Length: 208
Image 1 (cartoon, one colour):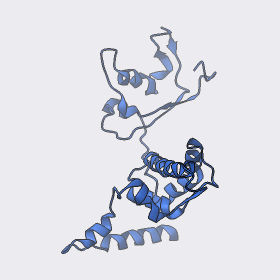
Image 2 (cartoon, rainbow, N blue to C red; image 1 turned 180 degrees about the vertical axis):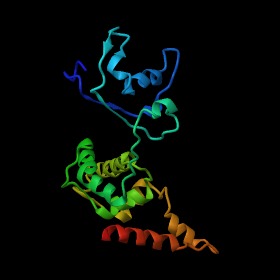
Image 3 (cartoon, rainbow, N blue to C red; image 1 turned 30 degrees about the vertical axis):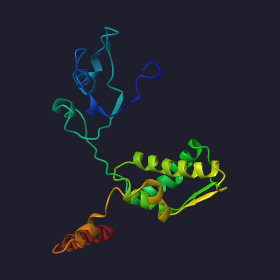
Image 4 (cartoon, helix red, strand yellow; image 1 turned 30 degrees about the horizontal axis):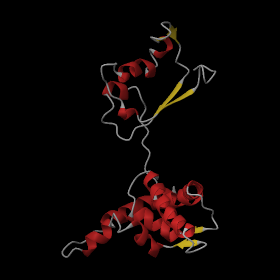
């Protein structure tokens, strides 16, 4: 509050599912009073030892999973579930932000390394399977470090990385396409009934 200079700031409580109780106390118990709109107007802070009004403060908490969060604490929150990024969204994030950041981190310029969209797609599909993009950024960094070694050794002035070059740098693919795997197994057929239902649902949404 003192740093924000106001009594109605936005507080971000990151990864609240990592809370743990030990001999020093239970943070979840303190948060029960902090997040409860019926009590936080008279929150009693043990440092100040006087009631403090938190009713105008907006709290946002993040979590990877809900199960570790105590039920009484979860009841005081409105849960908003966010889906992971799609393949196309990851590609755009990588192209606009991650690639630029990793070029700077590895002392390279955009003229020295060209990373194609097909290479990025292959990294997304074959080497990362996550809701976010942390693993994707690490793999991009690995590609760029390989290019940096090539340039620093004098073997080339610039490097172009395409989809075919990715396995030689990152190794064999870590993940396989589930649909392709199912259809390649003798005696296993992939049904399409669910797909038709999904397509019908999407079409009705567009019409509406």
